[in-house]
Amino acid sequence: MTALESDITGLWRRYSEGDIDASTDDLDTLDAFLDALKAGEVRAAEPVDGEWQANEWVKQGVLLTFGLREISQWEYGHTYNDVLPLADTDSFAERGTRNTPDGTVVRRGAHVGSDVILMSPSFLNIGAYVGDGTLVDSCDTVGSCAQVGSDVKLGANALVGGVLEPVEETPVVIEDGVTLGAGCRVTSGFVVGADCVVGENTLLTPRIPVYDLVDEEIRYGRLPPERRAFTRYVESSLGDHDLFEGGAYKPAVVATALGEETVEAVEREDTLREQS
Image (cartoon, rainbow, N blue to C red):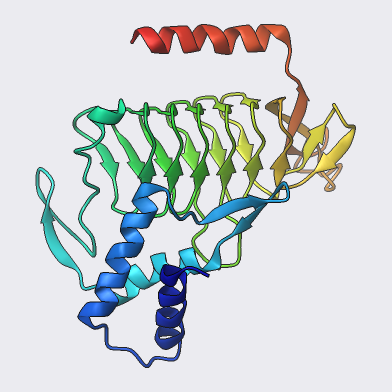
């Protein structure tokens, strides 16, 4: 256990017991914690033996940031009210990262890697991790503690949910090399495996089954690596009903192997992006 983890764990224990009046040292600890999040030195979740696991103490630190700080007024083109200022983005240019004007909002405590493109409007919440070379397109949201890998493409109007509470729950994870089509939503701790290509407007959540035609399995909460996924509708357990002519249907996700045409299309998009 690192010194920072020990400090946050002790602070959480006092906070949970209601025996705390935040001191200057406590707030300094939270400042150090936020700096470590920004640098990517600590993360809300990490892979352990191939499975993603939440770092509970990191999520506790995020909650402490809200619980122990007072709301203040800040300036970002206009006055806003929050417990934290927005992230300092001065180092972006030297790391090859772009954030376009009028609406790329990065909250303090989010990690943004090198060679990242943030298109406006987009929003990265505290505890989010965005790896090197990733594109966050217009109208995208990356929720609190969400983990987005390297060389990921988030299409316009995509939602990557967070999962801050409960602290033991793994947040949403988008592994390296994933392409999410426009309008996709990934919620409730769903894990998208590396190098997947997800079709437009697909909803990925543990409540919706994934029919994996590669391994011929029905999965929940995870899309295996190197899959092409898209929404289809399957017959509902409601079956025939007077209100549903021909029966009722519910959404599902179908996952197939990546075809050469899909890979070529993604590669063409990479070329266009490099030229933009």
